[in-house]
Image (tube, rainbow, N blue to C red; front, side):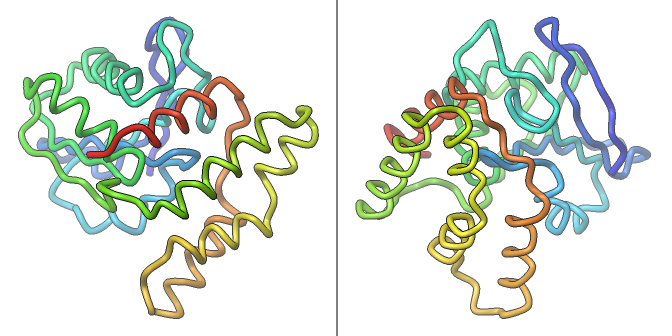
Length: 207
């Protein structure tokens, strides 16, 4: 993937491109506290498309938004502004996990410029027990002092437990790959306003 930068809302946005020579465009929205690298295993199969994956505000090196809140609706509006800045359209819009909520919101607000919508691991329903555990996890981290909150959110032990709870594949090699990626590759954001807005938003709605 080739890294690029563009200014959206007055702030630098980092994004990645694969297959830049292709004409048809696939815009991919990554998951919460994720990054474009986490989707490399999937998007490498779509060699017929130019793949564009932005780092969402508050993720990776892209700073948080100042003109909107970090809710599903706020991220949806930001994706539109990103598309307009790069003059993208029509695109195949893809969302993964939390990104599936954002992508679905973009399409629901307006289908203009969207050729097709693809949702990977969409947030369609959730276990009540897992939802309660998730809310408790974020509540503890957000209420702690910054130094402790960072350690809590970046705990390798908790990351491994979360991976174990969410993974469904029985393939041992794939499970090991997911563990390694979650533990070693992700640069989790620690912006309290991003975490608070996004977690409250995702608990309240689904695709």
